[in-house]
Length: 180
Image 1 (cartoon, helix red, strand yellow):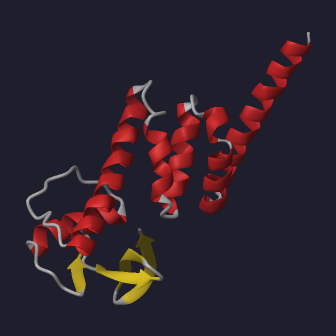
Image 2: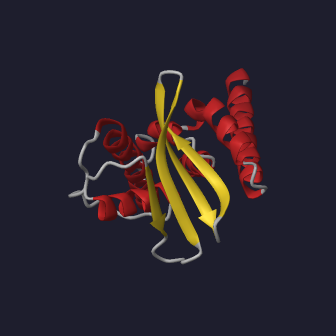
């Protein structure tokens, strides 16, 4: 009887955490959704909806490195595998762009899948337009929206290099993404 009670409590708690993340996500409280998801990830790692929701919340706030743990969990359904491929693409683009910008690694001959994520767009623009040339700042126009522009550069904080992507809408800075 105690075992049945513990199982029921675990199921209720699992549903509550998933509902909490969904509610936070719907209210655009992505950071808290990502943190709650991360905290409860291993208890819910077989729930692909949970893992996908957690991953999307983290992606919305540029916590890209947290996507690593999701990749191995998203394997049981077609939708989950598609999500894993999407997240993998973004992670790979982040690592390659970082390698290119920090270590002068030439990525101009790479062709990777395209996504709608800002880092992915900038990666594609970098590969297409730089041909391996080294600059302090790169400026790119969005291929689908003439009002959007991107500035790409590297900063060094303490001993860590970071790649920065700034988004501009009609020449007004709207968001800064920092990746390491």
